[in-house]
View 1 (cartoon, rainbow, N blue to C red):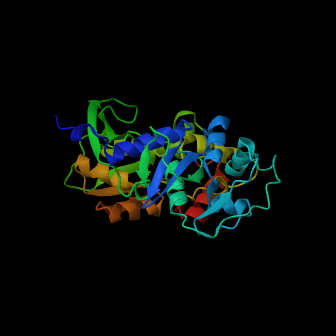
View 2 (view 1 turned 180 degrees about the vertical axis):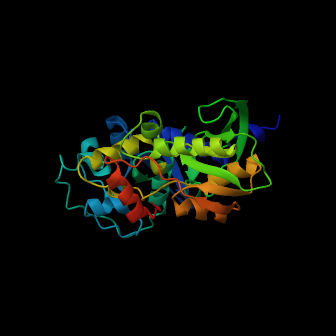
View 3 (view 1 turned 90 degrees about the vertical axis):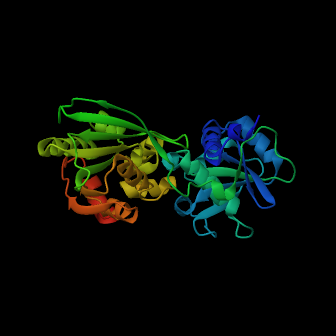
Length: 359
């Protein structure tokens, strides 16, 4: 028997590593002759933390965004490596990783950060934690000997996804909707074990002409719960209504909650907004960039559906640029202004001022 087809692929090993981190299990990250045990702070238990600290000299890796909040020097540019002091417990580490309780635990420093050595393993650890939709904070312990048996192993260069995964159109079915009785829903499943994305076709869009299209990132709070903090739900319904009125269109519902940081981190950002920070400042305090979404998946799904050109319903120039850069011609940007209220005026103003949205 040829065992090769039964061996996990790189994408499958990366998916395993993401799952391990989410369960609080460390993984092994390797680069040349160097290797380290890596564990995401979020989900890590006290017993496993003690075992990691006993294995060697540990660092807490955080992004430069989080380091700026903590007044810690990010000598490596995009990240900071904080040596974990003797006697540190999970509470101390969690307080550095999670900003939600910054006001309750204000005294955290001064913090010493490393400037010597190669930060490559730390950078890979943060990329992996982000891809698992966890707080971007990780314990990194260099390995002097053999790693414990059974742990998932990844090369540092493979911890970040360089390209979007291949997608498979799993199933499609007719779905009459309030916006149009001529609706059809597709479910796309990525080959890397990540979240499924969905496409909603209205009518029978002509593949030979630019289709009215919307790339809509999932927003559980806005789309489902009717949150007054954002304009996502009204934009979703307005886009479908516009397609229904025109008789044709396609809406891609991309599972990139919270600008790509996941629902848990999005709610952490909401908690920070309640402390007075705007949406961008909240993301930065968590250790994320303004927007962590990757719209290359949207371009890939449009190609699978047979579309090469779109009339894009968006206020976000970044979506236009990303589609154009990935082979989808944007024949027209169609403004989508909906859902402005007294409750979300500050949020929309921040999107316009700091993220370049055309509102």
